[in-house]
Picture 1 (tube, one colour):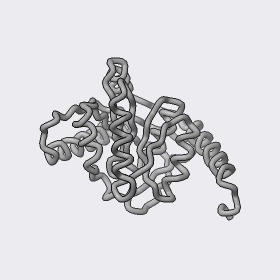
Picture 2 (spheres, one colour):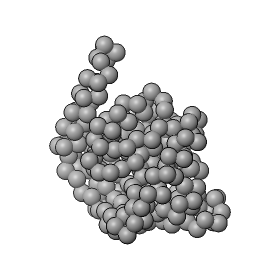
Picture 3 (tube, one colour):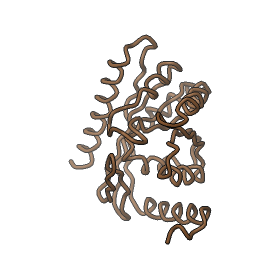
Picture 4 (tube, one colour):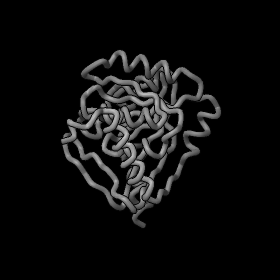
Length: 214
């Protein structure tokens, strides 16, 4: 049935539905200063969010000047179009297709003073919660800060593929925590950086969950 809906109409409808859903949720957002202060000082920031939690952040930062990396597969197309409609600058590519193009575009964006780049380090095809090399190498190359981000919601649907992708239900509460920035040295060993990033992503998730359920 959805195949009969023209693409532009489909994007408009899904965008309106998502705005309605997320607009009915109360939000508790903490830690914005962790990226805002850096941007004001001219340091570029990579927001690192696990793939399954991305929708809440796309809505939270709608109408902000954000560059975002998205895969080229069909499932990413609709979300990319909606994010573009909400004011984001989308960079398309993945480790499997157009990866070099996306990486170069991400580096170019990060070299702009005080830019904000959104990435799901385990996307678009997993494995879940294992960062791809690009996010760390881009941060090292440009000396950008990585800010780990966590989302927890009181009411949501979960769609399982290679990970669990969450869509919040209406009239719940969404807890978002932007964590302390991470800056890797250019000569720091990749495996050490990768381990540290996973640790910080896990820590911010534990902190956010504790805050949401205490």
